[in-house]
Image (cartoon, rainbow, N blue to C red; front, side, top):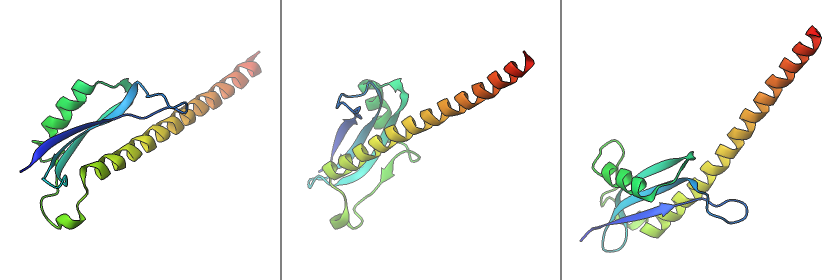
Length: 127
């Protein structure tokens, strides 16, 4: 007998507080041994406020899609991940995504700063 499971994964800031923006909703079908048979995810952009209801709707509807749903089936079920392991792996991915977003935002700000410095230098020369 199979059943559907749902999990919401959020990242935390450096103080341990849950971020209001970004997150992952993970929807999966598991068997009696809690092994994941099929799953789909819905990612919330790190600039958007996380909404559990929207994540649930997107992840569960993606379970019907061949594009967004991953079918693991019963091939080599001894090596299949159980639900808790799969959720832990997604939580690690969410934290990596948060950190890469912060790094990209810093790079954008540094590029703007460099552009402003060149513009100031140009305007100074015109004085």
